[in-house]
Amino acid sequence: MLTGPKLRLRFGKLPAPSGAAFALVRKLLEERPMHFQELLHDGIRALGGETNRASSDIPSAEELTAKNIKKRGKAKAVKEEGSNPVPEGHPFVSGHYLKSRILPILQSQELITRTWGVPVEGTRLAAERNGEQTVIWKLNTEGWRADKWKKLMRPNLREGQIAAQGLEVKQIQEAEKKAQREADCDAGIAQRTEREAMAWKARPKGISYRLERLHLNPRRARNRAAKEERAAQDAALRREAEVAARKLLAGEN
Image (cartoon, rainbow, N blue to C red; front, side, top):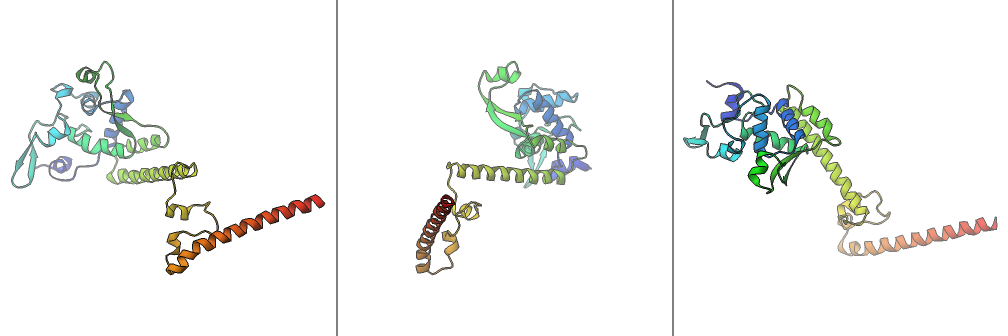
């Protein structure tokens, strides 16, 4: 009878990735940007494992979940024995696990980036692609990301800790996006929405917006904007008169 992580891997929710899995991905990408197949192949070799096939022959996530799975009964699927090139006990668990769990977590927290690029010259993948672009993974370690990497690589990492860090990263991303939006509006690159204008710290005093006049009847709502504009003009004239009066008094003294 199967027990522990192996049972969950075959029939239930996949276990949380280990800190060793994240650390291995970082170590590999520090050397150079890599394609998924290169990450899988080099990750196995990095811990002393051997692959029976060339890197280009290692099945992708799609192959592991489609070609190498037999359906039994109505909705049950069991992996064929020998379909997983990753040695037992390896932090990557399987090619499918690396692609569907480990890499997406790192990507969602902006610790790695998935992009198109030409494989590094001199590698097996570069020879196979013959100068053509392919999807590769790159490392992000700048700014706040350095601290997030440290937390993910600690021993005895738990699912809850990964989720908590994911929430922290999301809050950082939202704050950065909000700050960039505010800067674009200040520079005239973008225009504030009505709700953004209502929450704007530098919004003009005494001026209301449509959403703030919904409680008024149609006639009052139509007249409110003109009334506020006249009040703003009168206030501006008063300020100008006060400035002129102060200058006049200063000249007399």
